[in-house]
Amino acid sequence: MSDQRQRLPELAPAECMTLLGTVPFGRIVFTARALPAVRLASHLVEDGRVIVRAGSDAAIITPGMAAAGTVVAYQADVIDPARSLGWSVTVVGMAHPVTAPDIAAAFRQGLSDLADGGDDQVIAIDVGMVTGFRLAAGDPAAAHG
Image: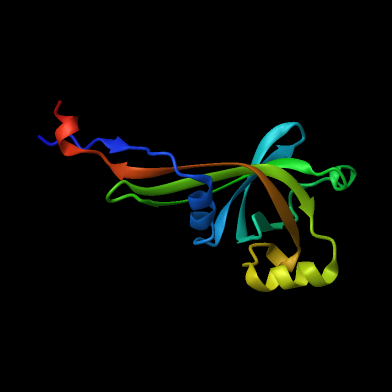
């Protein structure tokens, strides 16, 4: 019987950001009423920032925190369930609403709309920490040792 062990090599931050830029969707993690909350969002990577378009159904950034910013996490991945291969990337940073109408409109052009009725938030995350792992097949010889 074959022991198909998996490895999780860590990815360099630059590779993480490159991989993040290859997929259109992920999850934004924030605090709602003092509890962790997660929402599906579309994103793009621009100038070392992650630009997110999320529905307005949750107050990701409350009006009182908009100027100072809000700490959020953003996670995206690609996993092949049949082969158990892929990658996962998480960024943590300060999120600010994109309030300039022309800039927000330009970002909306490149981001999918997941919000019902077109009501949404455009958020820029200034990346402070980047982590990522690749789910890779292990060395078959090492699995038997």
